[in-house]
Image (cartoon, one colour):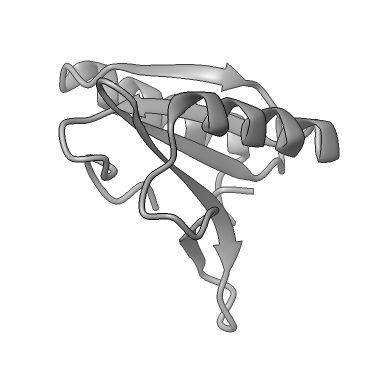
Length: 110
């Protein structure tokens, strides 16, 4: 779940609306489990740079975002392969794609 106080579908919807209201291209790639699915971000920087950030919890139980690959960036084909594998492993995962100019999240999603 993205936040202990909010079901994932509400949290994800709020994140997507916030991006849209700020003119940031965003799309929901995979809708996971409504109440408690984890979130995977695909951050896309045209023409072909991507980063994948996976939701984890630290020792205090707080949400953090961990890059899901060792390389600084991966290309879009590799990102799509990794996303498909993540969905195959856990169909409850939410995948949100955000397009940015610097391959970073536009704001703290927590």
